[in-house]
Length: 152
Image 1 (spheres, rainbow, N blue to C red):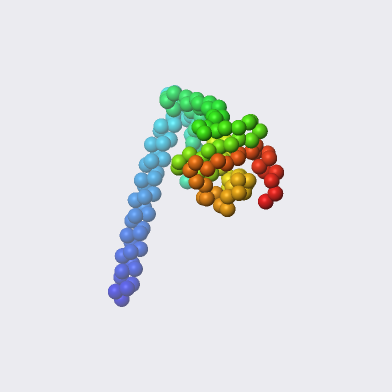
Image 2: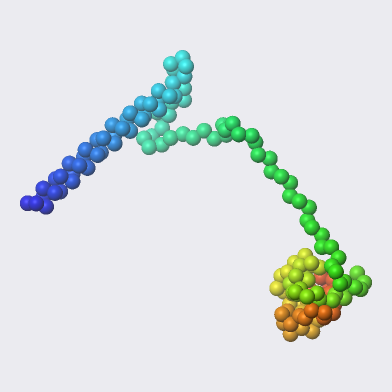
């Protein structure tokens, strides 16, 4: 008997909440429709032709803020000659500076530090792995096309 009473109370609370929400929604619809009236009292694009639960959004109306113009992208940065570089433009002899890594050297000379380029440069200079580089060591930096043409 108690369970049936609690169920009836919950159903009554649900019904009261439903009615209150419906009245509130009708009042908001009335305010919306009144706001959509033109100054002459005629309906101006009333959204009442939309199904219940749908609304309209005006896209492209000015917001009042200034237009944003994108800034042009800066030109690509060309790798400048590095300190410690010696040799001809065909291949370059480079003395490794303290704290320099093979990937930094590849990024500076080739514009990329991809693993395959770094590994190819390490093989070209007889290094067992790219981390075997030492400060003061002289390495040969060939053109990228020649480096990629080397057998693996």
